[in-house]
Length: 486
Image (cartoon, rainbow, N blue to C red; front, side, top):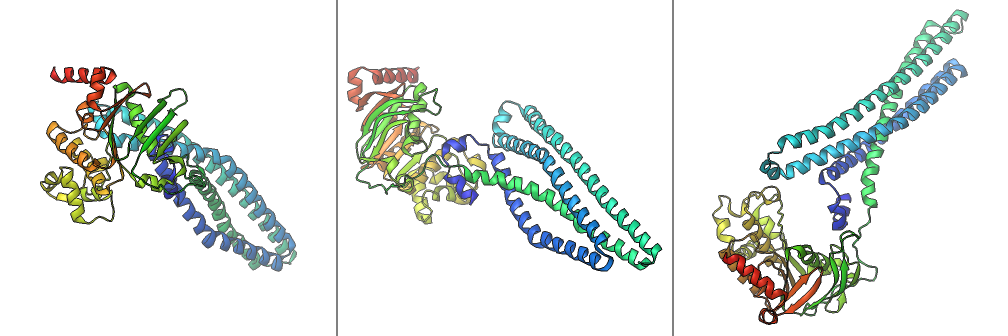
């Protein structure tokens, strides 16, 4: 349930979380639930029954005085345990936070293994991890010290109870009311009572900690997704795929606006390239994120075939969109699985055909394990171009109604780029397509080009028309040709 809920949360939440800490919270929360259920059924209930039976036997056999001693000692023991455990909670909470932080640092460092090696910063990462371990050590020492105080107090309470009972039993023997056997019986019953009492204290301590861990996990369930279906949302009625942005404003943070009144139209069945200087790169990529509803615009509207995307279901919207991201991240699984992820019901031949169209089939067949080759964490065993072509094959397999490409050929050489572009253009025939393009040679193949500057559209039209206007696009074209020529 928690895992499913995390997938429902929006991208903004996941960008602000650390994977390592999140993993620790879920692991500890799952273990806590298991612990609580186990001790409740198999330990707490039997312990309460045992305490009740011992107290009843003492009251029946030796009178109300012994029953009162037992009851008062149990009550004092429980109150003391609860009070000290409540005090100790802050140390265990601090220990958990330090554990989460150290786990997050370790996972983040290992995920960025190559970057660490590129800059010879192994020692820095070790020292950084050690700093968080030192915090964990300090919190753990305080937790252990407070545990020693708790155990000492519990032993004092039980020792006083046992001593009082033994003194009363001795007076009973001297007066002839009790026998030596009765004294042994009282001693045995109280010692028998000490076992579940000590265990009850331990169970409470662990249960308290388990409840803290469960609370941390359940707090994840309290996180509300910022992007979700509206109550009146209806499935997207696809009628060709005309995309309209009308006066759209958006910023990842309020202080920095990325889109400032972006307005443009992508005609149904046409291919459109969005270009601009590198400084407007986030604005270009943000358009795809808004269209996919990873985020919602601050103001303005985005429509597909006249339907505001906020008023259609997320499932129907995203099912109609196919995305080739600039930064391709693959599952640590086989190449076949990563391609088939675009359409899980696809058979092997369909997977092979998608790979051929993405110009990667021959490369895969040269691998020792062919399509069963495991690509490694985030696809690190493949080159950048190979990862990108796997991503493209995945979209070919999905065959979406609308194609979105964010620098889809940025990691490819010229020859492979030409082959892939031809494949992408064939896929985009009679299909609405948006290409975020840095290379204007890619943009010129599209039906229309939109030029972005400072979060708004400054020019729009076909390649030849924009060149003839001698405006911003013509400047970009001239600059890029000059750079490539030099």
